[in-house]
Structure formats: C-alpha cells, structure tokens
Length: 293
Ligand SMILES: [Mg+2]
Image 1 (cartoon, helix red, strand yellow):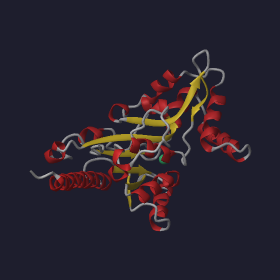
Image 2 (cartoon, rainbow, N blue to C red; image 1 turned 180 degrees about the vertical axis):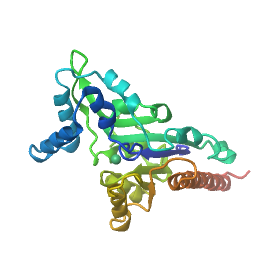
Image 3 (tube, rainbow, N blue to C red; image 1 turned 180 degrees about the horizontal axis):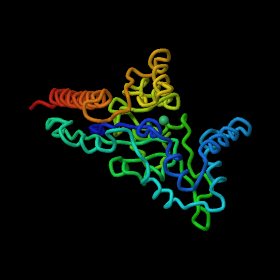
Image 4 (spheres, protein in one colour; image 1 turned 90 degrees about the vertical axis):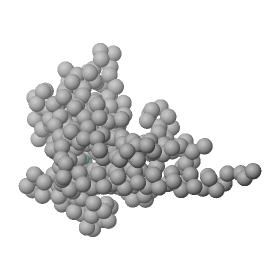
C-alpha cells in the first residue's frame, strides 16, 4: 500500500525570504530598547572570539540582553504580531486556495501546504499574521525556567540542520519526538521531494537548495529589490551564476503577476499535473494487471 502523495509543499525560509527585516530587529529590539548594532556586534564576538555557532550566539546574546527581565514564550509570541512581510504576504496564501489548482487537480485530492523552516525564533513567527496559513513552523526555541521566563535554548536550527526539516516534511514526521532517521520506503513518504518547492534567500539556504537539486525538488532564491546596496541581489546572483545552486531567482514580491508569483504558480501547477499523470499511469498499470476470468 503506498501513500497518495497528492500534497504539494512550499517551504519557506523566514528572514529575508518572507520578510525584508530580521525578526529580532522588528519585534524584540524596539520593545526592550536594545541597540541593534551593539547586539549584532556582541553576536559576532561570541561567534568569532568564543567559538559559538551563529544561532547559539544570538540566542545567548538575547538572554544576556534581556536580563533581568527575561520574557516568557507567550510574551515573545505576542511580540510576533509586529512582524511585517514582503508585498503579497500573507494574502498570497489565501489567494492560492482559489483557482490555482483546477477542479481536475482537486478531484485527484491534490492540496497545497505551506511550511516555514527558520533559524530565527519560532515563537515570534507563531504570533505573526502568517501563522494561520502554514501547516507547520520550525524554528529555534527557548525553554523556560521555574518562573516561566525563557532561560536556555530548547531547540536550535542552524542553516545546515535546516535540511533535516525537509526530510521531516517528506516523511510526514512533523512531531519532533519522532526520529527522522527511521527508514521509510519512498512510496510511503507523504510528500515526495518532487512535490516540494523551497524558497530561500542566500548562502544559509544552500544546504536546502542542494537537497532540492539532488532529489528532484524545485527551488527559488529571492532577493530584496529595495536593497540599494545590491547585497541581497548579489547573494542570489552568485547562487545562480557561479555556484549552480538554483535555477531561478526573483525579487521577493509575492503579489499576483510578479515574477516570483508566476514562478510559484507555474511550479505548483506543473507538480499537480505530474501527480495527475502519475495517477493515470498507475491506474492503467493496475488495470492491465487485473486478473481475467
Ligand atoms: Mg534567510
């Protein structure tokens, strides 16, 4: 018995992919009066002088800065309401529910789901306007102390670890207590890599772009067209021109008719058509195999 494999997944990085800003700068620094420049400098020191991983560096720096009034996870989630996004988000999620998939696709049970895999803070995204539209958000998390204040990293997702979550989505192991390394035959995996589209913005997404490339998935690198320094565009340009990591780059504009939106829509429809085609050939093969009287 094989899985229907009729779900299409778009998986997004968060910072610089769905939002032009870093979530800490938008939701946390203004609320707690933290100087962003000093904060990121401290993170850099932790990484360069003290050997911290990047993500652990910012999580440690944040705890230090918030002392003695560390918030709870619930307070972090409330601050997530301040997050803002590139044009077209979150409206696109709702718009995709109407008319993107044809009635034939829907008759075959094809559905579209959205996931976020971020090295930022999961609680902030959970409190944002995006949350109702996504099936699952994976991000860094803090555990709370006996007083209910964030106290220690509970989960860290570095950019190399992000690929683990592509495999979780592939195998339907969204509960983090399940061991993603357990063997599962390809035909039983709920969302094959060919049904996935990964959207990211730069070098931290390279491991995920590579997984997509090796497994038949699709990927798009996005850049901020408002970035006058062109650093954002150059990151993408390097990925496509010299590193052969992705086939498509586009400005991070998710509104109808934009280059990115056209790419996403074309990819979703192409995957849906492939699923219908696969089902037809499976059905034809099954019909041929049926015993004769
Ligand atoms: Mg990013």
